[in-house]
Image (spheres, rainbow over the protein chains, first blue to last red):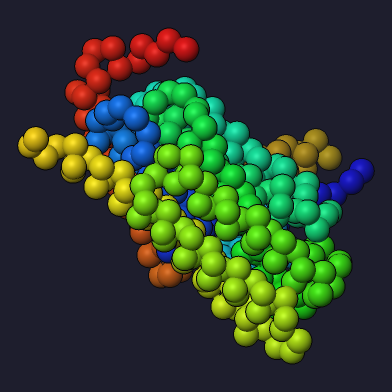
Length: 306
Length: 80
């Protein structure tokens, strides 16, 4: 006869702030911003309430993916200085609570988006959450240095979801925005991993600097940046955005390449990598903000009396 | 021997009756608190979580109501 010991469940001390932290609000803000741009540049008219509903659902879906990521990665988060204070390794939230919270938000956001906006956007959101949690978090992250190259697709999908929410379809323009974010993700995260390599090594995450060394990582950051900068200008070259966007994309792309060259040349310390990481966020923000400005100014000019 | 056995049986029956009486009496008395007792911090956290859930559900209800007004009666008609 076996005796089962039942451990009493300690009542939760998790506050609302811990649940918000579980949703990775900084990542969520970038997701919402890029989805918003996809939604605004889409042709046709979308009622503001429907647009707001779509953005809320996309934000909650992104939060769900973040919560499920933190649930699965709690063991390695505890080993890294950058993530050790997160709610689960910090002991403020039980893994089961995070799992239940993430699943509830994931199902809720997809169902509400499907019911109130449209099924194509809902299917894309479901695919994005599944890709981030299953393909990136559970499969790739601990197995291959290509984790963020392939996994970056999840973070690149929000402009397509925004576009689909507005048009019930997918077109070349949002796919171009997808490609920009997709190519932006590796140099952005590799710049971070250069000065967090010890953390990743301790946790056993095969990030590029851990597996291939710093020199190879710096070389690949430059290669991806050389590919990203022209891609950033493509919406202007293809006629999807105006000259103002083109000028900003050219200038920001040149600055990013200059930084990548500095990262490549850096022999000691990680000052250039830190600058590259910070500037890459500004770069993406600038591109998408200029798309917004471009579309809004075009709308204003269209409403001017002849 | 028989008398001795009867005495033991009588005593046992009296004891059982007394126990039943005591149990009936105890039902009307307040029982001491059992189970998990929340600390002040746990109570505050639970209250905050409950309020957040209530607000979220309220927002969801309002959202559904407004979208129903915006989309009209065909709110759930969505051909693929």
